Length: 577
Ligand SMILES: *[C@@H]1O[C@H](CO)[C@@H](O)[C@H](O)[C@H]1NC(C)=O
Ligand SMILES: *[C@@H]1O[C@H](CO)[C@@H](O)[C@H](O)[C@H]1NC(C)=O
Ligand SMILES: *[C@@H]1O[C@H](CO)[C@@H](O)[C@H](O)[C@H]1NC(C)=O
Ligand SMILES: *[C@@H]1O[C@H](CO)[C@@H](O)[C@H](O)[C@H]1NC(C)=O
Ligand SMILES: *[C@@H]1O[C@H](CO)[C@@H](O)[C@H](O)[C@H]1NC(C)=O
Ligand SMILES: *[C@@H]1O[C@H](CO)[C@@H](O)[C@H](O)[C@H]1NC(C)=O
Ligand SMILES: *[C@@H]1O[C@H](CO)[C@@H](O)[C@H](O)[C@H]1NC(C)=O
Ligand SMILES: *[C@@H]1O[C@H](CO)[C@@H](O)[C@H](O)[C@H]1NC(C)=O
Ligand SMILES: *[C@@H]1O[C@H](CO)[C@@H](O)[C@H](O)[C@H]1NC(C)=O
Ligand SMILES: *[C@@H]1O[C@H](CO)[C@@H](O)[C@H](O)[C@H]1NC(C)=O
Ligand SMILES: *[C@@H]1O[C@H](CO)[C@@H](O)[C@H](O)[C@H]1NC(C)=O
Image 1: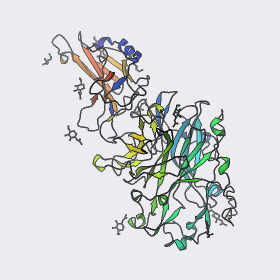
Image 2 (image 1 turned 90 degrees about the vertical axis):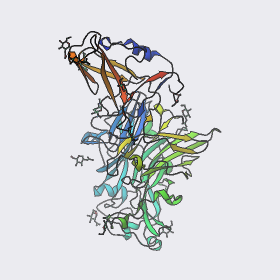
Image 3 (image 1 turned 30 degrees about the vertical axis):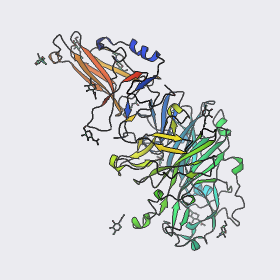
Image 4 (image 1 turned 90 degrees about the horizontal axis):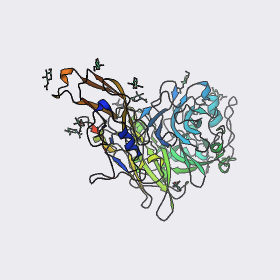
């Protein structure tokens, strides 16, 4: 167990806390292992569309989320010493205030944060929606285009924010699809009933601007910067031969970005689409009218994009949870399919060939069937091939895990090696619950093009690189002490997080071992240990560090740690210890 006596192997009376033992532990260069676990059961951090990064300047993990922020803020931020025990940053990422230069009206979704170590700037990419008709028309031609989602970028000098928009408008990108039959123009509001045959649909005028959500910026190792995003399902009705109906789809697209914004030492430059994609659809389709409404001028640019994932490109049955929603909902929902929340990583196989892996989420986020699949490619733009093992993450009703998806891929301490990867994501403990922050080990094998998950439920081994822990206190004896538990890098755990706690007890009292007789009591609240009563000579107060278990009726785990590997120690990962 993890107590002050751990490092010396014999019991120490905490009346005289021995701090030198921690210094000893920390100065050791040996490989430390811990049996500490984490669990996704009884989740406590509200979060959705989770993006996690490791930050070298704070030696901590930082999570960015669509949900969980305080009133008056957009996006929640959490930080953690171990990727499993989180502290919420008060407020959120972007303040809903004039000085933030906010441009969108609602639907603030899916934040991701990238750090340029050379300039020191942190960039937050996210989606937001325009609802003001004049602004909607400026980007989508039609002032009543319902899902006018665009991608914005805010910056900060710190991973904890606050982030401020670089400009009061989205990135300089006008993705346009010149060949799409704009079927909405044949329909009436609320646009739930599409034409009954493709021959009718094909009479619709061609061309639509594309609403974009779920940005994921991919920095390739040749220096090129790519924006992966999801074409929001709205105004993307695709005829489906199997079901003989139009289904509205979201797809995953990519485009190259310029890099002036990334290298700007003052972070005042908005990201823009790379020159090679700018206005490439100009002149298409023939006869396109930019503006339908003289009071509201439409956009003039028509930029390009590449299709990365689309259901009809490689149909997989698991993505069909909502193709009958119109009838199932008595005509209140559309028949839809989603491909969204993508993350792309690059690896090399043992012959040195690049393999790009992309995870994406399908089905509606509110459905228990929301799940994760993956596809692979040999170049950033594909073609991508979906794995036949999809979905690789999905609900497990027997373990009360539903709606799993939209996470991000992170190596332990930010490493880009495949040795120890995680996929922090959101899921729900019941079909009615909000979305919470979950984490699961991800296994990636470039040689076999394999991506698969470790367990999502049960007591799960902590990511490596965390041990040795240290426990210290600013006081001894009776009264209130503050106890600090830190990881290897000196980053403290939040002992008020339900994921972990301190446990304290009095080991011996007076000569007869009776502490009751002197009314000594010890109580723990978060980081505070309060000892009341007159401590008899020789009394020992022990404090151990414990982790919550997945099964409430099991005792908390007393954390222990060893240097080197004992016979019954499973190696979690050696690269960083
Ligand atoms: C620690 O976690 C608790 C519970 O989640 C939270 O109320 C508190 O603000 C956190 N403390 C810090 C310092 O983040
Ligand atoms: C921001 O604040 C304004 C004014 O209080 C409010 O109308 C708006 O809904 C808020 N936006 C968000 C996204 O919370
Ligand atoms: C739409 O574009 C396609 C070619 O992409 C063309 O075959 C078709 O005639 C166009 N439809 C209309 C209604 O303009
Ligand atoms: C222009 O759009 C606005 C907002 O949708 C609408 O109220 C108005 O009637 C439209 N005007 C014309 C001429 O279509
Ligand atoms: C649809 O209507 C039927 C008949 O009125 C009703 O039994 C059913 O619960 C309704 N379903 C939904 C999803 O509202
Ligand atoms: C991972 O990082 C190493 C060291 O910085 C670098 O040489 C390698 O190219 C990176 N691999 C990928 C796939 O980015
Ligand atoms: C220990 O630290 C806490 C928090 O900073 C403080 O309230 C308390 O007074 C300190 N106790 C002693 C004995 O210094
Ligand atoms: C401890 O002392 C109290 C008060 O003298 C007595 O009531 C109690 O039985 C003692 N407990 C033990 C275990 O001896
Ligand atoms: C601490 O112990 C002393 C005697 O050693 C006693 O006088 C005092 O009341 C105790 N304080 C508390 C908070 O129990
Ligand atoms: C939880 O632990 C209790 C006590 O050990 C055991 O009886 C029960 O089967 C466990 N529940 C689950 C879901 O594992
Ligand atoms: C953890 O340590 C405490 C104190 O020694 C002990 O009471 C408890 O049984 C231990 N828990 C487990 C699961 O071993």
